[in-house]
Length: 477
Image (cartoon, rainbow, N blue to C red):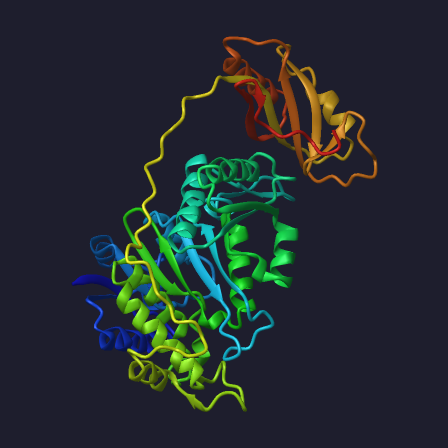
């Protein structure tokens, strides 16, 4: 008997969770609930994270968490509980199957059947932001080799386990050559270990365009966090309805399962909500905990319910649907069909071994790291980069000022007067020659900047690794 942590959630959450638990119980699933309270009431009690210590202990103890949608109160000061849960519990993989259930759920893509696997912890969602000048704020995009290896390998292992034929990688490494470039590089390395699975890479913009037009050409998609967040909602809607989609958040020790839609407060208490998203998440949970036969039974009963035209209001269509039902009656209809197989929709048959195990990360030998210089980011209210260059170029004899950029575009030397500039300037200083004490020279450069009333707001050291430049150039250089 598997004990799982359950959160009833806010808005429509309690209704769809109750319906889901009724189906699980009727199916004979070998699970016990351990209820916790998270979300709106915890936020409003003064806990800015929306979760208390007892809830954390339950999730960490049971390792499996079935979560209904929650409401985050409006206004500042409230942290995203989903992001907190994913990062705190190491839930590195977000898995969202997106399949058409045509003609019972209307869609323009009746052959669509794909899975989006999204990296869940890194990228711009690291949430590291700073305001640096009056006019400029920054958000750091963090991509790590361990993070890339885990999510990419998970995607290929998922494809192999579920007998899928292709894994596609979405990146933007024609622009972000180091961050997205690392993700793409790791994808190529790991794809070579799976010769039985086709692999291809798409620039995110054209890939997303092709996905919106012809989703049936894709099978498994893997991508960094932000792209995955956007693309997975698009694919869910392309399949017919975001409201039908469930997702899994998988880590090495814990897993969380949830519907991807929100708590929909206007529908709360009206017995109108479709519980399918959370129910499909629970099916993924049953597979994860080693109860695939029960998962098959529920999924096939759910498909029978759709086929027989028993639909909630969100997917009800006159002429096709036969009975409009509420949340509770939809759950009862699924329960009544447990043990039946659909006739039009394909019955499912899940693998009996469904645990995907990712080997521990093996850190590679450190490369030869050599300092080449430093970028000083400067808050300066002038508009002529020639004046700024004259002010800073002689700060230290150990460095040569090579370039000034503004918002990534080179404006000195030989910049264009048409380039619009803010008060945020990146000034690249390269070492005149290699010094064993180069880091000390950077400290001296900063002291000279302070003494000359230069407002340095950030520094980034410039390195090569094994002789390869590991920093970007300026656009227009």
